[in-house]
Image 1 (tube, rainbow, N blue to C red):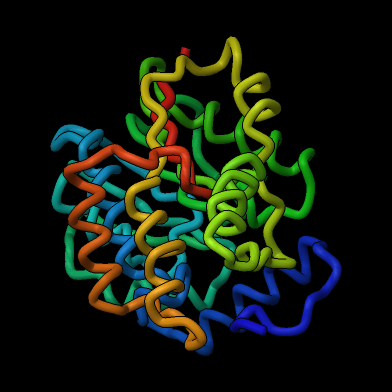
Image 2: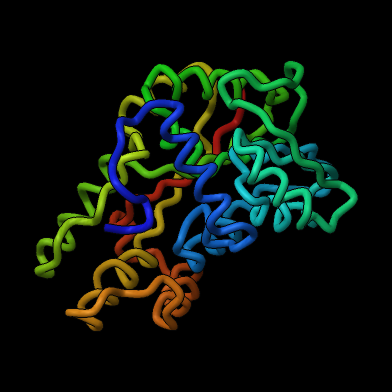
Amino acid sequence: MTYQGKPKNRTFENVKGFWDATAHKFGKDPSGVIRDIHFRNLEITETIKYLSNDDDAIDVGCGNGYGTSKFASFVKTIIGVDYSKTFVDIANGLSRFQNTSFAVADARNLPFTDNKFNKVIAQRLLINLPGKEDQFRVLDELHRILKPNGFLISTEVTRQGHAKIDEYRRKAGLLPLEKYWHNLYIDEDEFFEYIKGKFEVLKVRRFGMYHFVSKILHPLIVFPNEPKFDARINEVARKLANRFNEFEDCSHQLLAVLKKL
């Protein structure tokens, strides 16, 4: 069993409790919000491509502010919000940029005016909500606070992505990836159907090269030992993923760049 602990019912209170406990446990450690730090940096690099120095940006579900601080150098202003006060306190302690601030907020009811931000960043935000109604409500909130033609840069874990990477793992003689009790993985068909008329899909990026190396080759090399997220081979996988698009479907993570209509 991984750091997620004993499974609980996926209620709003239980999921929030999990992240509050995680914040206390990991503090400012970048792996506190996702253990795979090489993938974390890969998605940050990809996200930065869509930021510009005249953007007023928001990072919704910012955790301890690791990503927010990376984005700060590429925008005019950025605010990170999270429903965990512990995470926000940690983020405030780490912030080194005058254009950066943090606040406690529930993504289902964000305390910002309509059409406020040029860029909204949301990384694994939706999957940490207990039900589809909550996910759709948050999508509506992200749409509301975006300026017309503003970008939502969203990274989520999907059911279809999990199924595909598990297919690769089965062929390699590996067990399926662990599924986390506190995550409600996105159905891609439902997601893209819901945003019709709200957003234009500008880009869909999967991270198959990275995950083929880190989730298939790496476990095979170290078997029967458990692969480590900070292993050198994952660093190599991150560098390869920036140069090659092979095995693109071998990924449970999907980054979508969406323009508000």
